[in-house]
Length: 348
Image (cartoon, rainbow, N blue to C red; front, side, top):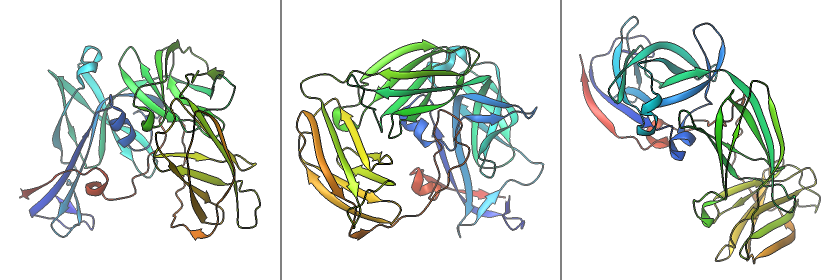
C-alpha cells in the first residue's frame, strides 16, 4: 500500500466499504454519475449493472491509501437474486473515473455461483456491468388535465435483466436520457412519499434502434383526495423570480419555477396536515418560508415571497448528464455519505 504522496505504508488502516444493489431504489440513487461507460475499444455504452461497491482505505490519520502499482486485490460481490437468470459466466469490470465523470472498463469478473469474483488495481467505485447499445428516450408527463407533472420520480426497468434506472421530471414535466436499444421496458411513476411508496402509474413499452420521443404521456391522478398546489415566487421588490425553487418540507420534495416564476405540483393525495414551503430565489440567494393547508382539488396560493432570509448554498456544476440515471454528486466523505462501517485492519 502507499499514500497519495507515493510513500509506502504499513500498519493499521481503516477500510470503508459499501455494497450497492442496483435493483433497489436506494441503490440506484446512491450510485455516482450515470450508467454510461467507455469500453476497452473507446466506444460509449449504456451499462446494465449486476452489482457495484465502493471501497476506500485510510491510515489512522485519515490519509487515503491505494494499492501499489502492478498489484491487485481480489473482490467478491453478490449478484442480486432477481438478476441471476441473466447473469453471464464472465462480465466486464468498470470503475468510476471522477475526472471524466464516466464508468471505464478495466478487467473482468468470473461468476462463481451467486457471486462475481475479480481482481482490481485500485480502490474506488467498481461495477459489474453488461454493455449495451443505446438510444435517446424522452417524454413529458402530464396529468389528465394536461398540467405538467414536475418533480415526480420515474423508474425504468429492463424486463430482460431486471435492471432499473431512475429519473426525475423537470418543471415542465420533461424527463429523458439514454436507455438500452431494442428493449422491453417497464415504467413506474412515483410521487412524494407522503402519498405512500406505491406507483401511481405502471406501463410497459418497447424501444427500437433509433431515438424516441414519446411526447406527452398522460398520467391520470384521479380520486376525490387528489390535489394540485400552485403559486408564484416574487422577490423583495415583488418582481418575478424566474430562477426559483420551492422545497416542500413534509413532502421532502423540490419543484423549480418556470420563466414566469410559477410552480406547480400534483399529488394523488391531500396532505393530512399543514405543509411548509421554503421559497428560494436562487439568483439572489434569498428565501422565505410559509405554511399552508391544502385541500382536495386545486390550491393556488398566489404570490409567495422568496425574500428576507439568506440561504447557505454552494454551486455544483453537473456535466454530461446524458443518461436516464441523473448524476449524483458525492459531496461528503464516504463514511458520512453512506454510513458505512469502518473496519481496522493491518497492512504489512
